[in-house]
Length: 215
Image 1: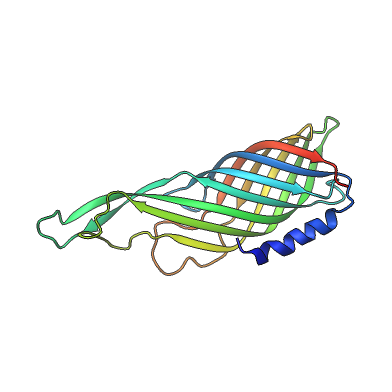
Image 2: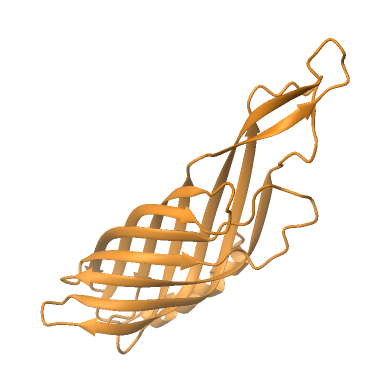
């Protein structure tokens, strides 16, 4: 993540959070599935951190969210070929693709429901996010000296804009469950043909809201 993206965001939140009475930090984790890759879908363990520095939701609904998706490997296969007559002309190689996703977003909260027991339902809209996605490809027992994979998958690393939204339900203010949907990167993948696309994670997480008082 480049520093020039995050510095204005952090300065904005630090400036406006001074002298506020109460702030929230929400931490959650669960399971995530990619919706943008049909053939080889990616699964992750997401870790989400929400910082709500402004206190009351109805008066100051802006917040910052950081999401990091820990990947499970997606399995696939490719064919490799050789011109060496002493070896099999074609073999099938197994491959693993890991997609690492990190996102920093600014959003605002739309209250939907709240009762006297401090149970509440919110729609979180995050129209602007900066996302970094890194794909790492590994082939099992690939003999590069004798075999060649046509149109092989390669590593990809790119940072671009995304947008997302989430439904969040809080139990007694502190416990939460959340459903989060994020768009793929708003960038061109390039002309090289790869078997995977940028990830669009659908996260289901549960966690806890830490409430603290700022001076």
